[in-house]
Amino acid sequence: MIVLKKHALLILLTFLLISCNAQHKIEAETPGIITHENNQAANKIPLPEHGFYSGFLDSQGVLWFASRGNGVFKLDQNTFTNFTTKDGLCDDNISCIAEDSKGNLWFGTPNGACRFDRTTFSHFDIPQSDTSSVWLDEVYPVVNPNQVMAVLEDQYGDLWFGTNGAGVYRYDGKTFQQYLSDVGMFYEDGQQHNIILSMAEDLNNDIWFSSLSHGGVSRFDGKEFTHYVNELSDDFVRVVFCDSKGKIWIGTHGNQNGGLDSFDGNTFTAFHKTNDGFSHNNVRWIYEDKSGQLWLGSGTTNLCLFDGKHFKSFEGKDGHTYDKILFVVDDQGGNIWFGSRNGLWKYDGTNVIEMTKN
Image (cartoon, rainbow, N blue to C red; front, top):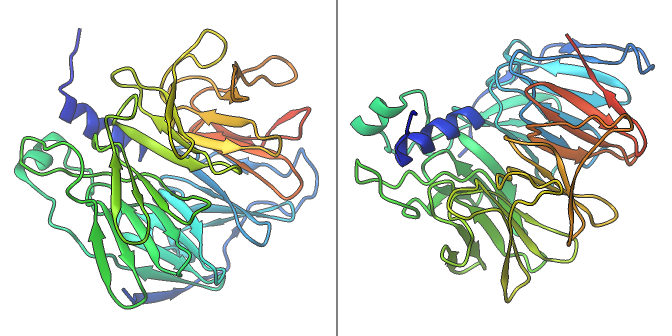
């Protein structure tokens, strides 16, 4: 039996799973058009080498899909377009996608963020925190603590950048301020390496931050932070999500007695693995459909549905299940898309259509 120490497991899992002013600008060349055909058989996307990592529906009804090595893929009116560094994208390793109120797209990369005004890509540097150490270099030297893992614009227009080990930075248009770098457990080098994979703004405009460094979740009300650790079933948190009714949902890795937690403003409630679809306590993506049902993506087990009381494994019309799903998004037509390292699928409410080809 191989036993990994907690700190080594943390860094390994982060890598395997890996939501200032422009320093330079690169004009986008004509990107690679995957297909122009408007039919289901032909309009498929070649599966990237490492599959897909994240998905996003922008304000114009355009779908975007991130890969970890093959850039981003845009789906607009049945046409897939692939942007890579050859077309001006700042990096082909994309960890998150977001949009600001001006319609700019933001992509998280190992070297800060990349802004796309739909014409030009601009490299956007965040401060480079000195979180390197002999311990980190020896345990997993390829992990970059300054990689942007999540981007969010708040009600005031400030941008927040969650990082892979340096907490979060808020940018007000002029200066950066760092927060939450001192949250979570201390590792052998005496540093905390707080990883923030997810941020969400609730209906009161408070911002919630996850911590993949045993820091639970933190809530910012515009003036101060409140930290929730012991209230959770697991302090090793991957995703935080606010549903349409204002309830906060917290997806954990599943250490300790973890699972899916909810917070109604007063009380935390924990839901643990069951025999009816929620077969592992690992939750890394939460999506709410129009009926209020939650879709739970896990890097470990099957895509799961939760109606607030009961879990069930999602099945296609033929009874096929889909495991290790990393993201779920919808489109303007009401279709639900989900993807992983193994593919990309579209669910029209009846049929599941595979959208990739080898």
